[in-house]
Amino acid sequence: MSATDVFAPAKINLTLHVTGQRDDGYHLLDSLVVFAPVGDRLRLTPDGALSLQVDGPEAAGVPSDGSNLVLRAARMAGQESGQITLTKQLPASAGIGGGSSDAAAVLRALGRDVPPEQIAQLGADVPMCMKPRPQRVQGIGEQLSVAAIPSLPALLVNPRVSVPTPSVFKALRDKTNPPMPETLPKFADRSDCIDWLATQRNDLQVPAMMLTPAVGVVLEALHTLPGTRLARMSGSGATCFALFDDTEAMRFAEISLRAAHPDWWIASGLLGDQVQKSAPSMATQ
Ligand code: C5P
Image (cartoon, rainbow, N blue to C red; front, side, top):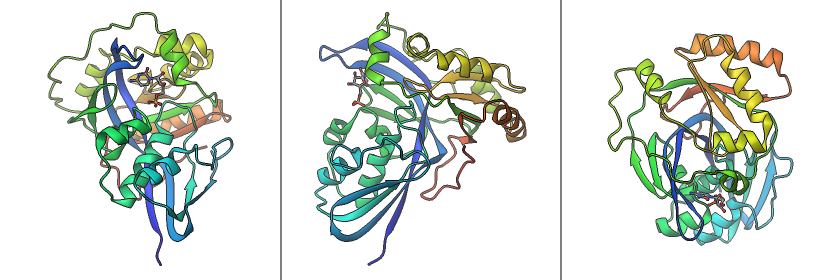
């Protein structure tokens, strides 16, 4: 029988406003999310008992047992057979939704109806990864609305330090920050969008920098690159992104960043472009 290949793109929070906290400790968010043409790949082969094998450049430390979200998602969808190979391109615990996107990709590939409330139990980021397209995310991550965002040339950079999400939320002092405007602006073009994004925030950036100073080092490096229009952290970090006016400026900046920081994970590409099932790989290292 034939194998099914599925792509699990990186999720980037262009903005992430923490607007409150529920009684169960989860935080209320207002976030603009886009997806990148870099991501993990999964191959589902229908033979044998359900199993998971993890390979790829970012496989180190990723569990292949029942604790992996991929197997939890497959079981949730009623799948008890088949071999899954997960090729990790995305660093783990990096603020770009790697594990959540993998889980969502398996659910997409299996094509079974799983109620949204159940999908959310896998993790707050899994619902937004089910349809990888620009969207506004509210609630704790389960309220989704499609957003119109122009494609944005970006560098994604991780200093190879993993950051535990709960610690970053815990370190956030003020849990009640203003949301984004109720109606998002209609962006005339890419430049207009970047100007507006610069007026918004990631409320987790300061606590993440306090816990993990490497985040501040990355942001500083991105700010000083030629052509950077905006540099910000994604999710709870440590991955940060820089936005550029065009792909030439992005590539130029990428060359100098790679030369200066050969040890960092770096990817480049257009954020928010319709991510295809088998997206072309962004160059990473
Ligand atoms: O849902 P998930 O397991 O991905 O969340 C990881 C942790 O991040 C939670 O245990 C919680 O501490 C924190 N979190 C939060 N509010 C959210 C999402 C995550 O406090 N909306």
